[in-house]
Length: 415
Image (cartoon, rainbow, N blue to C red; front, top):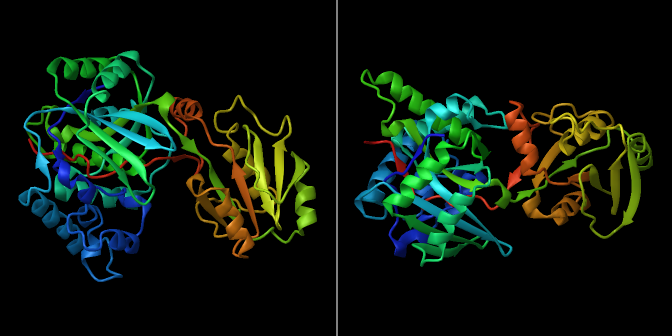
C-alpha cells in the first residue's frame, strides 16, 4: 500500500471542542442547525453549510456548496484551522463504553482504491458520490476522513503505544454520545518512515465506513490527474485522508430491522411459518438479545422470541449466504413477508444497534411497526472475507461505532 504523512489543517487545542463535529451523514440539516446553534466555529458550517440558510434550503443548491468554500476560507483566516508546518502522521483514539481503539491518520493513494487494493464491501450510490465529489472538488480538500481497517500489525502497535503514553494534543468528551476523543502527533522522522514502510508491506486495506467519501475522493483525484498534462502521480491530489485501525480493535454493532405488517398473516400463522427454517423459542416480555451467529431475536405483540436457524437453512461456505442478514432477508423478510428489495420497500426500516433493542420495542409498542428482528453483529473477519472475494454485502449490514469525529484534522489537496 502507498501511504504518506501530510500537513494537516487542525484547530488549536483550545478550539477543538468548538470546531469538531459529528460526520455529515449521521444527522440531518435540522439536527446540525440545532447542534451548531450560537457556535460559528462548528465544522457543520463547512460540511453541512445549508444550516447557514433558511430551513428547507436544498443542501445541493450551488450557493450552499459556495458557502462551504467561503466558510472553510474564513475558518483558516480566523485561525480556527491552522496548517501544520511539516508532513506528519497522527494517532486518533476513541473510547466508548470503557473500550479504546487507536487509529493512524494517514493519506492513502487514489491508485490503490481504483485498483481494488483498498477494498470495499458496500455498493455506493452515484448521487451520494457526486455530492461528496463536489464538496471535495470545490474545497480542494478532504474535510472528513474515511474509516479504514488493516490487518493486525505488531510494528504499528508498538509505534502507537510509544506515542499514546505521552500527553495528547487533544483530549475531550463530545456530545451527544459522550465518547472520548484523544489525538497525538507523530513527528519523529524515523517513526514516520517506519509507518510508511510498514504499510508498504500490507497488501490490502478495507473500508469499514465511508464508502461514498472514498469513492468521491478517488474520483476527484483521478479527475485532477487527467486534467494535469504534467501529472507525476505524487501530487497531493493523488491522496485522500483516512483513519486506519487494526481490525482486531473494531466494534461492529448489530443492524436491526422493523416491519410494518406481517403480509396478511396473523401472529400465530407468522410464528408457525417461521418453524419451517427456525427453532422458535418464547422468551417472555424481557428484552432478549441474540447470543451467536444464526440466532435472531423477534419482538411481536409484547413478547420476545429466540429464532435459531436450522441446519441446512444457511450455507457457511458461502461468504454472503452465511451472513445472518442474508439468512433473515431470504427466509423471513422475503419468503414469509414478501419484502424482496431492502433498498426500496417501504414496509421495512432499519435501526442501528447503538439505539439498543429498547428502540425496537418502542417502535413496535407505539403501533408504528408490527414486529422487530434483531441480528447478531457481523464480524470483521466476515467483512474481510467478503471484500477479499470481491463480493458486496447486502444493504444495511454493518454499523461501526463510535463514528469518527470530524474536524480534528483536514487534508488539503493543494501542493
